[in-house]
Image 1 (tube, rainbow, N blue to C red):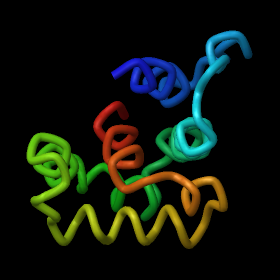
Image 2 (cartoon, rainbow, N blue to C red):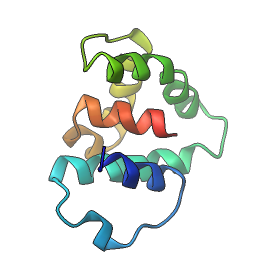
Image 3 (tube, helix red, strand yellow):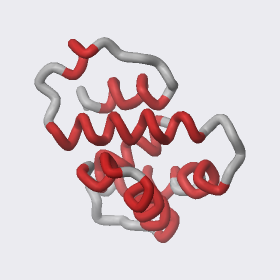
Image 4 (spheres, rainbow, N blue to C red):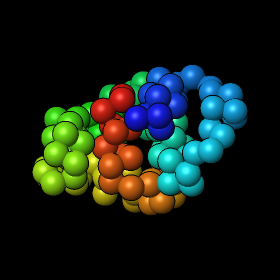
Length: 103
């Protein structure tokens, strides 16, 4: 939960002081960087925005079930993010799902 707050801030397009990342794991930092990349795309109605935003319900089910429920739209969004962002490749599915929910 502690890592979700900085991810939310980054997805909102704000700059967070480096001290907020102190003690964060590498994967957590990667998910935060992915959030920054994803937030820059939320300003235009392009395909990437739609793929990620349409995965919100699946992401919610995934997080609520502790990773046991994996919907097709979430899988598409995870694949899309990882194909286009090196930081997303290092983040866990759970971290990316939480970042999608925070958008």
